[in-house]
Length: 215
Ligand code: B1M
Image (cartoon, rainbow, N blue to C red; front, top):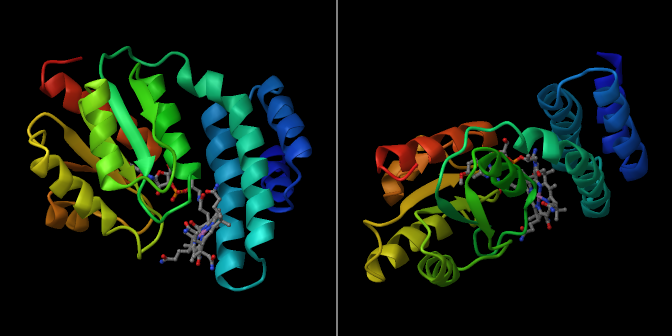
């Protein structure tokens, strides 16, 4: 689809204003928010990732692409969040200590909101102790950890251990995700749920709460 390709290209060039306008135009033309997200914005970000890996673009280029991504998702957010199945429950979400990547985490938070969950967003570079303190303070049933670096994914284990040490392990469902994370890793560290993408994470969060009789 030409419109989505153009969005992807504008995102790769970091043209936030253009991305914003083009996303709105695509919506006005009747394209679905999900298609615009997947085949426009995420596809563009994926290309940036490939170029970043091959040293064809550098950190500043990635940052302006990330800003353009944010501009596009801001337009989509109310549409992706609306119409979700209402569920009760509170989630503390964050990107683990040492890790500043927040685009995926923000998408997960957005989709969970769409499931009617209340989100306490701890931001990025969140230590295990911060996750636990926020979960206790807010009486959260879910702790959701995102990691994008192989060097930081180990922090997720620290979160699981800190929940045990704080005596709340049986009260919180610990969810993990992010590009380097997989199901085997999640099982190894004792997390409860691994989800490969934001939409699945939101569905699994709602299902976990339902299974616990909360939703
Ligand atoms: Co970084 N970076 N980065 N980066 N960056 C990656 C992750 C990398 C794969 C690039 C590469 O080499 N190809 C590589 C990691 C290599 C590795 O560890 N194996 C990398 C590196 C090396 C680095 C630095 C070390 C670079 C440097 O400084 N030399 C540095 C680290 C900084 C730090 O965190 N301490 C760094 C910095 C940055 C920027 C700041 C420039 C920027 C982040 C901006 C921001 O987030 N605000 C950035 C970006 C944008 C990327 C890439 C290009 C894109 C990441 C992204 O946002 N993807 C990335 C390459 C890539 O992924 N292709 C790369 C889109 C996003 C929607 O996907 O976050 O995977 P993702 O989320 C997905 C799923 O993973 C899942 O749902 C989402 C989709 O629905 N998901 C969850 C995520 N969290 C979840 C949680 C869940 C469930 C699902 O449950 C709780």
